[in-house]
Length: 270
Ligand code: GLP
Image 1 (tube, helix red, strand yellow):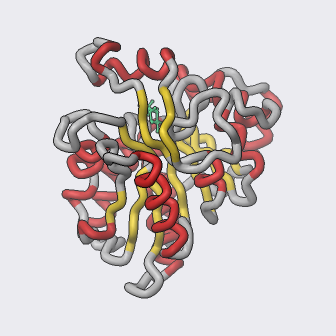
Image 2: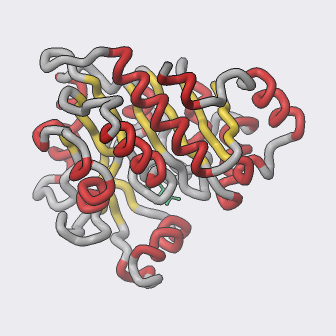
């Protein structure tokens, strides 16, 4: 696992955007072999989406041959609801780039048959050749997508019940009223994420420090689903200094040292 420790949220966001662009360009995608990109919602990736839009506007990247798969969506929230992940993705990213709408895949949280919807999503990823790069964030309890503590590390896309911790954390988007937060969601599984050729998680802020330490230093455990990244051949965590508060000094110094020449995001694009 790589741990890229950035000074602050802005440099973290720039690094992840540059890395993503570099990987898309390296793949040289085409209509017959598009680049498959897994995407998260939440506040963590917002800065990265802004940087990706800037890079697109500067002509550094095109998303014409990029096909996206979002991690998750609430169950029962209308797509046009301002807090649906459909609204989030179009407002913060897709409306501002050249991605063809048909290339966007977001789980339908209002599907009549949610299990069939989840199977269809997995089948589509497989049919297109598998996800090249899965970007993600984590919750304060270390969950990836909506794979709450206790989720099977072999899980696939399915319906999940959200924990009180997550309902409370996400109530900030619903007038701070936990009763307005949908209690279930459709989410890719940990197994779905681990199938991607690369997985990159963004971890910023002091409230993620415990989860980061568990993910990097703790054992692989279903109680901290971030730790599943340890099982991936190409797992990267990009974090900021605040998120490092619970890491051992030795761990912090080790990753600072071995990644010291890889921190400048401009080098990724050169
Ligand atoms: C939700 C999403 C996750 C996200 C998490 C953290 O639970 N399903 O994908 O990582 O929130 O969100 P934030 O980045 O706002 O802290």
